Image (tube, rainbow, N blue to C red; front, side):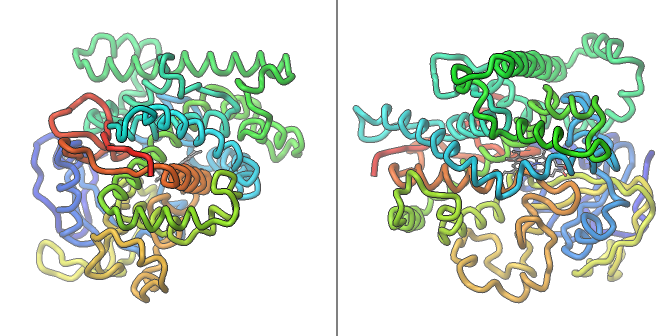
Length: 524
Ligand code: HEM
């Protein structure tokens, strides 16, 4: 349905008869500046969608508290997001709504608790040490080497989610083994993102008969990108089937011989399974959903949700540290000053490092891997604003009447960098701001994020379930790498971060070749 705004919100003119502003919004190369332009209109901005549909880009703290927490039942993940994830993964956490989503979430929560993460800490250490050995090998004969940091961050985070999430090793550190799954993940989001304006039609296309018929139609389409996407999804599906076969086989066999492949029972899926066995029938998922949780739906959902996000965040941290050598030295001093051996740092010790915490928070604030997400209003509603906006007719708007079915973009990057909240230096990378008491403007804004004061991991009932997992992973990987290596910018390549559902690095002129972050690495 085409929905119009009920109030004269400011915003850019429509740029295209059919796609409105969506091609600008989803443009990998110029999207970052378009999003900055949107934020300059104010905290509630009108965007033109498909065929005259009007959507609202919101970055106001009070409005987002309302939408994501207080009245979350009235705003769902967008139908496009749900349907698209369902087509790619099946019925998992990223592709269900309402009571069904709530049930799945309740089952999964304990597996992501701090208590459970504590037990995973040694595993995170061991995997990072494997990465360190790889880099040390490369540096054995040279003073410095140029390394694709994104590639390595992607491998380490896939291995961590593989082993800690599913008890499965992707064996990513063996450079002689072509890793099909890692390859698919690397290309999935960038390919998907270039199709975003067209994916707005997904809720219509899923009604076109059974899956086999839709597959037949896809094969008739002339678009190379759609064919590529289908191929990636099919390859991931086949690979996830193989992972599960291996896992089933190994569980049947039991014993130490299979531990390298299927872990030691501490992984998320095993915890889920034992939780399922110990709970009342009423509390459990129906059999088909339980199967969805521990079958390839989950392999794909977990790896998809965890991999690109965390590797983007870790790459960004190392990139920023390479541009701020004094901050890098300060962080290294902090890690080295640990009383315990940094290699064996416990969960509590690594979480208690103040400068490491500040570096992670500041990078996640200024450069959230997911710069926006989408929601749809289920019913009409009025949303209050903390910072009034000036309407296109000059009037002052204090609240926004939202129509049923209206599309909403949650402006994560815009709220994280809001000047009224963070002050005139909001756009600067300053980890020190987290070491002092935060200004009252930040505390008063009451930004509803699960990660305090920023919206990077979102808020409310669909907030990131893996944020503590990811925080631990980032801290261990960064601490152990900084302890041994110096990271510097590449001599002759300009790094560009591209707009996407998840932002990824690349270099100028390297369009369509997947993420890439060359950096110089040397021993300290
Ligand atoms: C820096 C790293 C990460 C960032 C920035 C991030 C961000 C987000 C965001 C913004 C959402 C909300 C999506 C939406 O509502 O449209 C989300 C959801 C989710 N994340 Fe993360 N995430 C990260 C790491 C992880 C990790 C490591 C895992 C798993 C191990 C994970 C699992 C999930 C899942 C399963 C959801 C769906 C939750 C639901 O719908 O109930 N994420 N994440």
